[in-house]
Image 1: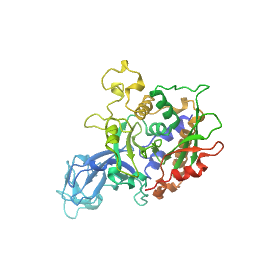
Image 2: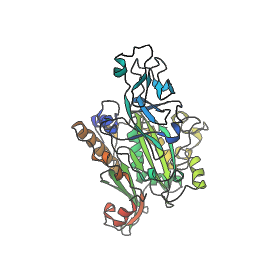
Image 3: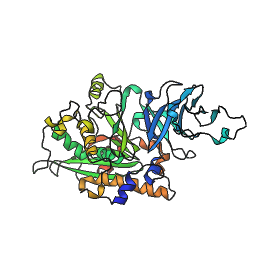
Image 4: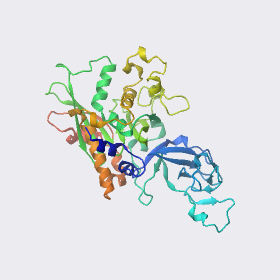
Length: 415
């Protein structure tokens, strides 16, 4: 469990919070690549880490990201006009380019000091791997983009989506880390026993710190003598988790991006590092059968959500909770939401198989405190360290999974 003070440190991500400052040292996905639109198209309002920003593509096709508050009187720039090389405020008609410089200052003299004093605050923004990324930390120390394998494959080899999660980002991260319980949920949905009896294999979870976060091994021990079947997954700073490996070269992961303290935008990716995604797989994705929940039309809210009891047909009382979902992933997300928007971790009871969850908390809190003392995480300038993948392996009894040569080779991204 955590103390109430540590839980505050872990979960609060707004301006001038320790964890928020840590998050701001990383590139963060904010939109799908096809959402940003054509040159001079409608600007988009983005909420990230408790603050509002406006993203737009100018006449030349360049991306811009500004503080959404117009520096004149604070009107929201996302309601402005994107035209002729810049973004014009709907209230005062001041016009800004992608770097925040003023292009037009109606009704002010040419020698007005406002031309320099009234600049908008601009931030770094990039298109990379099918997503739009923002960096809203100190602009004189821009980090590397994270070189996930899926960012380096062709567009037809990956599928990306985003959806809202109605709780703190860390609950999403912890759900993604909970590989042993995900396996148990799969057994439950398949009609297999959920509990552990004398004749049932036990799960064990081990987590080892890495330069990028954690490597997590979830082992299924059948008899204590035979080789162990191990699922190797990852937590990558600050909020990325990977799903267990698929036997058909299908790999998946999720970024649990904090919107604010009590809500999260999840970015999910399914990809094949070797070939284009099949029509069958894409059909399963559209039915919500993997890590891409079905969404309410025209929104990023899931069809199965808190308001309808996770039963879009309006009959939650006639179905067991687990049977309401198209995938165990969506069930796991819903379970995180049932804890409340920010779970009180001082009231939890952890077990041995919560090792990955405890380790991730410790790494994040330590990094946040270190940053307060002036130490920036080394990983922010090593984007190549994100080139890892999940892997299913067989490891001999008594061998640490993270020391096994087969595992080391298997988790290395090929692309």
